[in-house]
Length: 404
Length: 166
Picture 1 (tube, rainbow over the protein chains, first blue to last red):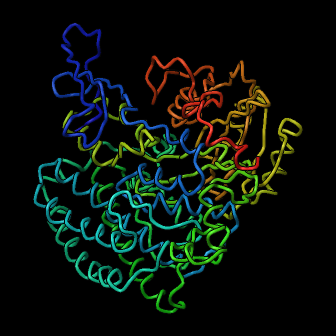
Picture 2: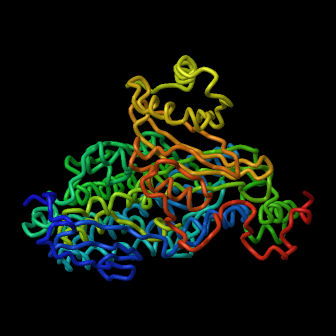
Picture 3: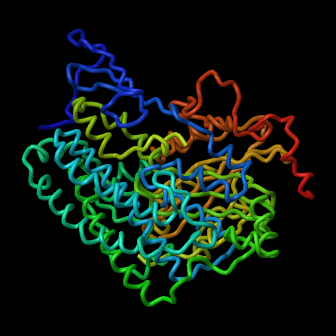
């Protein structure tokens, strides 16, 4: 079925258009999104996206917070993969301060970031299945997000808004339970993912609902600034992890899956394959850590790395550094830096201008959800309403990242 | 294609635009330069369509307010995925009349990025097809990221810089 054939326009005397307010709180959109759609029967004639319902002025707040207090703000951008945001922010500051990070810390971070990517993709792919009517798959795979959250808990104590890590490393080493949980996850998750794939990949109903729907050309995707799995589904092999490796991603052997047509089915397949690649990366990282000296979880930069509480209470130096860091009194170069990481949805960029004050002079987040979403209303034109719903699920727009 | 270097890029742009590009720096390896609003579209079009550099991807548009200079800088981040290089382009505008041509006919992504920049800084992108507020409410009346608008109660004194030796 052709989904982009011309439809009746407003001035056609035969048309009886209906205006549908999809959102801002519609259960099918999985978040706070409003789209005012003109419908001709079940077909969308035109749409206007209204966003900003959970705008929290993070960029303004960031101008009034020392570096450490900005990490919790980044949690709340893409809250499905907060650790990637946290690490991305820490790496931006480390780039500004020219801190070099020990390999073991890089690998520990990679483990956490890839777990976050899996959690993010689990959400998106199971929701696509859910929206096409396959509740089983959603229930099978979604428990593994819970297992990932348990690993976060072991590493940082939090689950959703993790605030994981510190500038210069991690706040604590992974304990034995964390490693045991990761190993357990690596053993159990591939089995479940395989089952998930066997339920959906060749499923007639699922393919009918997704294949050929919302196809996007490479030119269009690039012009609209798409990044991440959405761009890769169109066939462009752009991934920040390989094009500008950060956190020692160059040490890992993994592949960047790409699709061909950019339709919903391709996006689903790309995300699934990325989960397999993430599992591969985590396995490699677990091996690599064994070769590194144990017990190292941060760089030796006492003037930037927030010391542990027991040190602060017992050690004069640590107390001084603690005070200076918390009050934003660290000596950071007056410079501007752009650092990008591969978030769950695409290139997550941090543009930081530091003027030597307590707080950033300006901090801008390049939020992939915001930029990816700008095509949605235009894409929906000529599409069936139920296809537009799956299209939105497959774009994995996270309201927190969309609205900042 | 092999990765391009900043030096090659500087040479190429220098030959083409000469003095129209200025303040060339390379903070943390990212080539940064400024141009004028009149030259902007010509520069962006050249960067996008030139086969040698091919900056096919618009990463980001944002703005920075410098109240002591009475200026607003609009900052473009471009990325050439083909030659694996990024650059940053700045255009400084007067604070009281921040007008700049739109880049939305070059990249569709510029549409929302420019709307966001307008929403927060009041930068008017001339020729933009739909320059409305995007994240804030339509009745807001001010452009909240300008530095004269405080985040918190301005009478609060415990966070003033003077208490920290500045």
